Image (cartoon, rainbow over all chains, first blue to last red; front, side):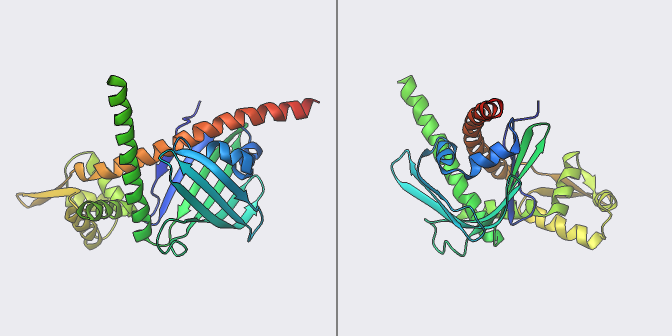
Length: 161
Length: 116
């Protein structure tokens, strides 16, 4: 049984690569990735609730997801599909709407679905336009990570009290 | 912003594949510079340049013993990177665990469709 853990690597100084194996054939992973009602069920993880997921799955079509965080604020991401090979590959841009100069900081994500013996390896390669932007993403990620640790700490503290 | 700048530097230093190779070599212990050059199969000036970058962000340290210049790995600047990767992996793992749940249902639906 291969690891079910997400693995993150930094292949070059403008890229972040995430890989994860799923116990399902690739057409189902692809479906869960591209169907609004299904995206709503997993995309926000434990950070909040996906309140809107729009998917216009064709080259040049747009997508937009809105999440309401547990803390109450909303964050939104959108982008455009650049390449679609059903059940195999999706290349799309991603813009975090809260960022200054958001459009220039667009990330190009290449999602690849590879099936072996009924199991699917998903890889998400995030290509940033510059090293500075990749670093900004990492820095903001670290802040969020720290915030989550704080939240966990708070929960522990509350449960102890 | 001092923290962010330092972090970015260490990230950038590690993002270069040759520098990662150097760190891998030094992970095995202190090495003379000639060893590193030989293992990488690169020109000495290029290796020296990479070692200088790594030294500037504090990822390697050096000392001279007789006529030999020895380099060693200094691990602690790597910690912010390690921590970030861990926390990023963690947030994706939570999403993917949920996706696992969705996929289990889709597999059931698929079976149903296939059989009847």
